[in-house]
Length: 310
Image (cartoon, rainbow, N blue to C red; front, side):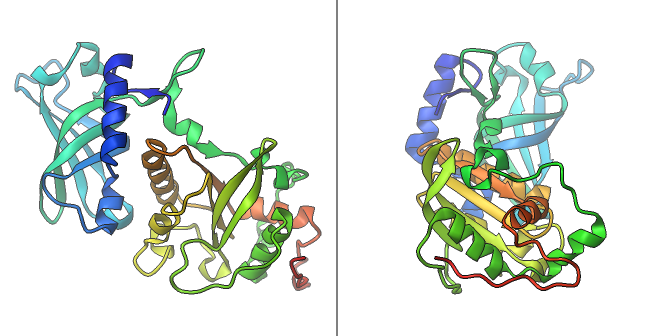
C-alpha cells in the first residue's frame, strides 16, 4: 500500500503493522464475533473532535462518531491525552467535524458505546508525484473506467416516470446482460450461501483485465440500498469481500445509500493493506443506461425481453 500516516517513516511502520496483524474494521469484527475489549481495529471516516479548543484546560481529548451498518445505535469514542499529540498542528486538524484514520484498540464496550484508545490518528494518503490525496479516493472506480460499459450515454437521465419501469426489470435480466458483456459461458444460479452473484476474470478496467465479484440487487428492494437489504444479517458485503478479487461490484436497481458505500469502502480499505482492490458502485441510473445501451431498456408498456447468455 502506497500510503502514509502522520509521517512517511512512522506511517510505513504503522501500515506494515496493520498488514501483518490483519487488523479489521469494527463491522468485520462484529460479523466475526470478535468485537471485544483488547482487540485492535482500524477506522477511516468522519469524526467529531471534542476538547481541542484553547479554552479546554483538561488533558482529555476525544473523537466521536455515530456508527451504522451492523453497529447502528452505537457510537465510537476514541479517548486520549493532549500529551500524546506529536505536534501543535494536530490540535487544529482533529478539532470539530473532520475525517480521520484511526488505528487503535477497544478499551471497553456497553450497549451504546465502544470506547477505544488509539495507537495512531492521522491522514491515510496516497503517496505520488504530486500533492498527497486521501487514499480512500483511490479505491473507487467509476463506470467510465469499465471497458464493458463503453457506449453509455451519460447525458441520458430518465424522468421519474421513465425510471419507474426499473421495478419491472428482474435481477436475472441484469445478471444475464452482465454475463454476456463479460463473455461468461454460463449464468450462475442463486443459492442461499453464495458469496457473490457473478464472478468473472474478464472485467476490463481501463484496458486491463481483472477479476471481479458482483453483488446484485433487483427490484424486490426498490428503494435506496441500506445495509439491512444485504442478507438476513446484513452480512452479504462482508461475505463478498472474502472472495479473492481485484474489483468488488455492488449493483442495485435504485440508488446506493451512504451507509452501504461507507461500509464497502471500509472493507476495501482493510483488504488493501494486504491485497490491492477497488470498488465499483453501479446504481439504478447506471444500470438503466447500461440496459438502454444494449437495447434492453423497456418502455413503460413493454416487458423486458428475455435473453440467454451465449
